[in-house]
Image 1 (cartoon, one colour):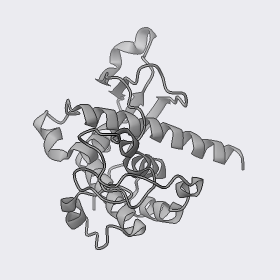
Image 2 (spheres, one colour):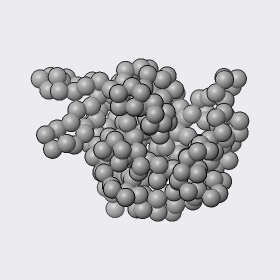
Image 3 (cartoon, helix red, strand yellow):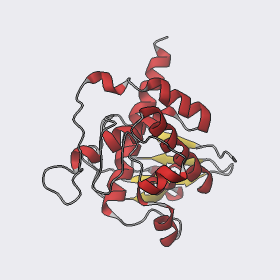
Length: 222
């Protein structure tokens, strides 16, 4: 499998969520894709391209789509134990090592998709920790979608496939995970103008920043 690095340099790491959740991007001369969620200022602002500019998402898909909305999860997240955030650490590390996807991104997707509850079923029949659709379950070779390890490996393999397809562009990788490659292609390999996809993209990127900051803090404390 060809592995394309997710070469994303987060120049404006913000733990507190800004009033707006605009995402800006530019690619340097070495092909490294840079992102920031803070509006660029000064002479260098012209090199940045705004990727999306809608209002930020309020929480995870599993939480945000409950309460009578048309996209309510058939089986919502019910696990509120703090232990759930580390219950699957070994599987996340295994998947990260196998498919060369950052643990921070895997965690951000799991948090946004299921809030770390492996029993969640979406309105579209996506299942488990990484909310795998029926066709993805088959394509990624997942035998038991309810098994946390298999679900994480299957979802991370899909992230790897998408990262390869989009040359390591983390924005398109995340958008493709939510909307599918067909939607990305339909809009000329850009983020499709779907409300829920754009909300999802902001939520996952926001959590990715948070997870990267946790990793940095943990390294600093050693």
